[in-house]
Image (cartoon, rainbow, N blue to C red):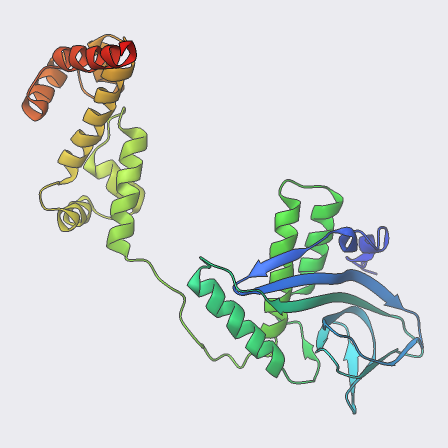
Length: 312
């Protein structure tokens, strides 16, 4: 007989409920009230009652029945159902077989916030609207929301790094996956997508800044982006025709050189190599052409200006 995977949750049945979980989502706030695994012995009845909050019920093992409003439905392993504020419902385990139930009770309140990601706000709004319109019938947990309960318990029990943040994300996952169980498969909206040229340009520059001291080439940066070198060169030309790849790389290296000339006493040869220039002579030629003076003169000028400022 296979071991019941959620058995461990009986060891510390209040573990997740001890956490003060309040989760901002768009312009809503999700307040977790109950978060646990419970067991109904054979024939156990929970008479008609209501809650002021939303309750998500999942059946990981056993069978029974639920009455939602005035309609009775059979329950079996792998099913879920949802009860909303004010809904009268009744639960009963099978007369000969116990029934386990994973429960998540949440209060969802409006909480307008500034600077919220508009896509997050739209998705939260869509979810709440869908939640209020879900049919009062059980469904199968097609998207494996139940696994999130066990993952949250394991993370909390082991105090895994980032466990509090992980559990907050898992609560949202449970809600979304439960709602998805009732989806018709229709796509309501499309997620925002990147402007790939802009993204690739920004990523390339970031990579060049991080690796300017080594042998950075058009080919190896293109390889990092999984595109051709010709395509990458075209992306740089589109971003700024006056600053092709080679010019941007040179600018990055010169900026590093200027910083070291101003802030350190390192020899110019060492500064040149640290910035990715072959040697001091090559740096001297590039620096004089671009800056109109030599590295040594630049250093003296900058450090003298700093000294005079400190003296004053």
